[in-house]
Image (cartoon, rainbow, N blue to C red; front, top):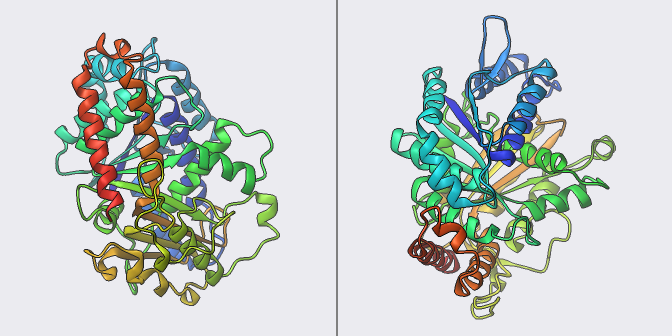
Length: 451
């Protein structure tokens, strides 16, 4: 089944390009770890998900590109064409000559309704090219105007137009130090509205990815492209084909449906976090070896201690040490990370030696979902993106509770003094909508706190 990707705003378009590049490189890279027949099957499923093939043999993405300024889309499409490996559909993009000014309300209330018909027509044309539609994958930031505001509006339109299709939003969490002065307002409005429309939100935090680039990839002068490459690698490790059960002879045909079935058992809990190990520079990778025992041990402790990268894990945290009364700001410090559901994806050789029973420990999970229902494993002997062995954990847990609480608190402090509210009311977002957003996100915080 095919996934239609919708790239929204500067951030969404740049990450989308890196994601398709990672996927295409992986598609055509066989290290000999799996049979030729299995590799051909892997390629077939990957192609069906992300690309269509023209009569000329060119690989064309199943993607729609949207931005209110033309520069990034033009650059993105040119880079893809110049690669000579794959390209975007030349008729599947939309841009204007005026951006949203980092204002969520401008994107949602002005650009969204104004350009709804043309954007949804581009989506429809991509859907019609699919033999079978699995759903939609949108890529967007939270902090800006087009990606967050118009992206949220497009998400709502997708839900209305395709109510029976799966809808997953990749959301880029802003830097804590601040990208724009009103990023916290933009973020709470984005999260509130996405929760109404989306099946799940897969979140990457810019601060964490920046640390990965610095501490694990050893990049001295980190660019946005470096950050986007790491995000793309992690996303590819989830969306490339894998067997969803032991002894399966076919790769999953509906990755979005399988992902939702594994990780979103209740509509109150839609926030997904992603961890992927190992990650390092190509130079270091050439001199490194890994065992499944080491990778899975690190991944489990990252889950327990809520460590977001494999360096600096607190190995003292154990499930039995979970506090009940300690506070962070107005809430308890989450030294132990309780999960609702977890998915582990293993890619590479010698999978038979990987033991994952420790992830089924009932102490890791909320009491109302049995571990056998809460934990899922996907596997493939096909290595991914030059890593002989790699492990990915997608988690519906308290992973994002503290960042969410911080953003809501900062937005509330600004709202209490009416700072910048006029920038939103002039486009039609009233104070009541802010209050509704705060109430909904406070309820989400409460629900995750009580897992």
